[in-house]
Amino acid sequence: MKTLLNKLLARPEINPQTAPAPPSRSAAAVAARDQLVNDFFGGWELEDIEVLQRYRYEGASSAGHGEILDWLGIRTDIDFHAWLPRPASGPLSIRDLPVPDDQVHAETIEYIGLICSLERAARSGHHRFVAVELGASYAPWAVAAGVMALRKGFGEVSLVAVEANRNSVPKITRHAKLNGLLDVSNVDLRAIHGAVHVRDEPVYFPKIDTSHDNGAQLTLEPEAQDYRGLAYEYEEVPGLSLPTLCADIPRIDFLHMDLQGAEEALLQDADFLRLLDERVTTLFIATQSRLIEGLALKALSAMNWQLYRERPTVYQQNDRTPDVNGWTLRDGGQIWFNDKPRG
Image (cartoon, rainbow, N blue to C red; front, side, top):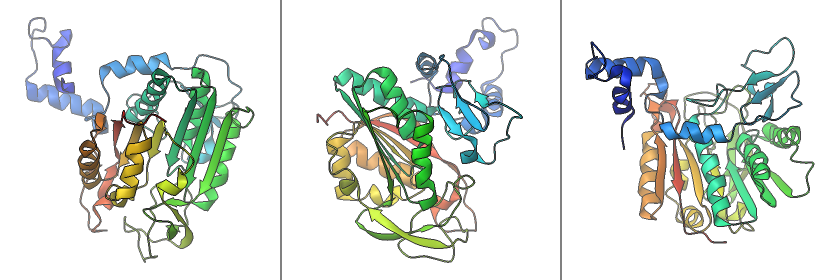
């Protein structure tokens, strides 16, 4: 696989045979890094741009003032991202392809994971598409999966969104309604208040406003500071294992997992890994640290899964917390394929 630097050096404008003063390899690397900033390791390939282009929504939309309208035609209440500037009138329209990111909440690799899950499910010939979002906030991925699955012609769509913050759970149905998913009979949506855990037992979750902070993590006991060294009040929430959450789901076409470090325990839990292997076909996992990246690589490769795309975590040690998951400056991500489920 060519590195991004090699691809840049292969471009005609910097080809030694055509350019009068070719940059040194180090100069080209510095230029690329200056331009790409935090996307230097990307997690996407040049061919992914063509894939994204195929799914750009060109139809009409009824998005209005106080909403975000994105490149997929998905409508989002701008209050869910309180830091964004509001236009004087009409929606905030962000129609550019999400490369290197969508300018709001997600990067290229996450959209590629979703699209791959749809295309893999379509090739399998299944009539039903199932998406599960763990650490859902307002369920941007479950809702996008539902909208795109309907466009792609799946006869049944099942969406499960699990969120530990009590105040965010109503936002899930609000977001689904805004995008028409509550108005069609062949879509089943479950918004679940709970924290994904290795066991079914009460855990604690910070009281937060997710429109400003989506980085909270469950804990078994309330502490003075969280894993990032921040002080919060906590509330007891249901801790739910993946086998419990998916007891009646024989096959999961897309599992999006963003648990702000709770993945560390899950990726070392035999029951969690067994269910992944038996039921999940496409997984996107947000990686909050190099530790979680390594645990995912070790556990999933041992089950003969295929790592399709990877974006390394950007982090730096700090003196606020000894927890390596609290050193994250920018989340990483991995897309994994598993061909074993047949349900």
